[in-house]
Length: 88
Image (cartoon, rainbow, N blue to C red):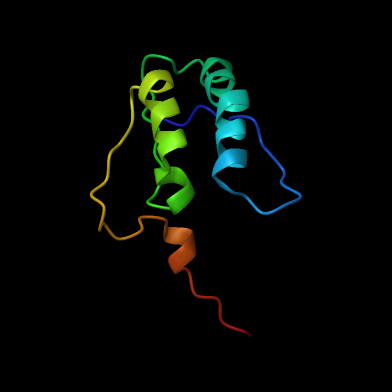
């Protein structure tokens, strides 16, 4: 059941593991509380290297126990990236 979106973040630079960690620290818990889903959410991220970095994984281990874990070689499940646009 969709309940809305969390806080939207605009980036003005390239996203790296440190910036991603800052975004999680500043917004993950607040978004969960805002949407009132603290008992029913599962956090998902793909196998992007910044998502799998040690500092991010350690933060999530203690701050986000409800995660969907994917095998390291799983295909990307993001349908948007597989969308093909054709010119009219």
